[in-house]
Amino acid sequence: MDSICDTLDVEFANEISLLLEPLPSSQIREYFDDLLTTRQCGGLSVKHDDERGKGVYAINVFKEGQLILKDQMLVGAQHSSNKMDCLVCSFCFCFIGSIELQIGRKLYFQGLGISSNGKCHSDATDMEDDSYTVSDINLGECSTNNLKNTTPLPKEIVESLINGKLELPASGRFSLPPVVSCPGGCGETYYCSKSCADMDWKSSHSLLCTGEGSMSLCKEAVSEFIEHANDTNDIFLLAAKVISFTILRYKKLKAAHLKEEKNSAPHGLADISFSLLLEAWKPISVGYKRRWWECIALPADVDRCDEVGFRMQIKEMASTSLQLLKAAIFDKEYAPLFSLDIYGHIIGMFELNNLDLVVASPVEDYFLYIDDLPHPQKKEAEAITKPILDAIGDDYSIGCQGTAFFPLQSCMNHSCCPNAKAFKREEDTDGQATIIALQPIQVGEEVTISYIDEELTYEERQMMLADYGFRCKCLKCLEEGHQSNTNLVTAPTT
Image 1: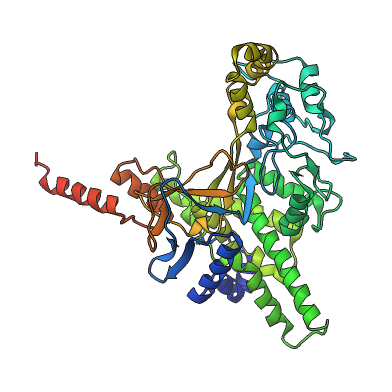
Image 2: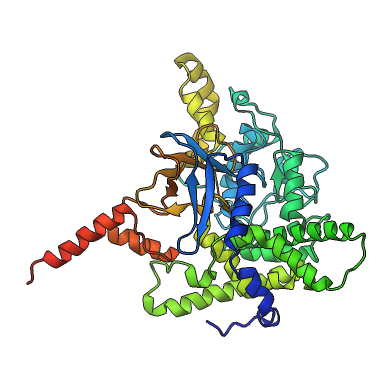
C-alpha cells in the first residue's frame, strides 16, 4: 500500500500533519456554535469529548415527528448518471425549468438509449440566454436503442416538451424556478437563480468550470478530470469541490489579511499564509476522516484474500484522479491540499460521513395529481398525459440523487434504536438534510440516527458498522449481544 508515493506527501509532511490534526475541543465547540446560529437551530448543541468524539444533543424538548434540523450541505454533487433523469440546480439541488422540460429531457435521453455512464450530457456553451432547448443537448456518441417496456413518442412531441411549445394539463400547479446558466459559460451546470449561480461560483465552481470564464489553469484538464470521475467514481468530483472550496476560502482570507495590513508584506508571510490555509480548511477539519482506500467497505464479490490488491487498486485510482486535478488547478501556494494523503482523507470523509442527497421529483407529484383528478377531468387530461407516462415507464418517479457532506448531520452518532431519522417532508424540495424526531427527545438527550438498516440481525449490524470503525454499544446491541452470547454458551454440543 505504501508503494504509491506522492512527492508532496514527503515535501509537506509537517503541513499535512497539521491539516489532519484534530481541532482542540474549544475550537470545535466554537465552530459548531457559530454554525448552529447560522442554521437557526436553537434547540441543539454539539458537544465533543476525547473518548466519544462529537455528538448532537437536545437543549429543547422535541416531540415525535417534529423537525429537529435542516442542515445545508458544505459540498454536494448529483450523481452523473442521475443527470439524465433530473435537471436540478447545481447549488441547492431543487428541480428547475418546468414539468414539461423535466419530462422532455427524460424522454429525449431515454429515446437515445443512453446508459448510466454519465458520458452524454447537456452542453449549452452556445446559449445566448438562459433558455433551454433541444439544441442545447449534446448527443455525443450515444446509442439510439429504445428502452424496453416503454412506448416511444414522436420526436416532435418530445422536442415540443423541451422547447416549451407543448403545455401539459394542470402543469402550472407545479411551477418550477427558471433555468439559469453557469456564469462561466460551461453549459454543464444550471441553477434556479442568479444567487445560487453566484454562490456556487464563489464557493467552488469557478475553479472547476470548463467554460470560457473558468479560473482554472487549464479547461481541458478540468474536462479530463471530470471525465475520469464519471468513468470511475464520481466521489472524486466531491473531493475536487472540497479542495476548490478551501482554495477560494483561503484566497478570500488572504485578501482580507493583506487589506488589513495595508498591502504591506509582513515578516513570516509563509507562516501567516499557512495559518490562513488552516483557517480555510477548518470546515473540512471537523469531519471525521480516514484514508479512503483503508476505510472503504470490501465489496461482496471481492474475497478477503484479495483485499490488499483491491485496496491498492483504489489507491491507484485516487492517485490518477489527483494527478488530473493537479493539472487543472494546482498552485504551489496551497500545495499541501494536493497531497495524496489529504486527497485520500477527503474522499474517506465522504465515505464515512455522507448522507445521501435526495430530492423528490415533481414529475411524480404531477402524475399522481392527474391520477387523483375527478373522472371527467382525469379522462380529458389522461388523453394527453397517458401516452407520455407510458413512454417514460417506471422511471417517471426518479428523483434527484447524489452525495453530500452535511456538517451538523455528520456529528450525529449512530444507534440501532435511534430517536431521529433523515426524512424529507412534502415541503422539503431542495438538497438540505432534514432530520425528524422518531420519538419524544428530552433536554440533554443525545440525538441519534441509524447509519444502517437497524432491522438487520445483531451480527449483521456489527459487521456493517465495522466499516465505520466502531462497534455499536447501544441498548439494543447490548441486549441482543448478551442474548447471542447466552445462546452460544447454552447451545447443545453434538
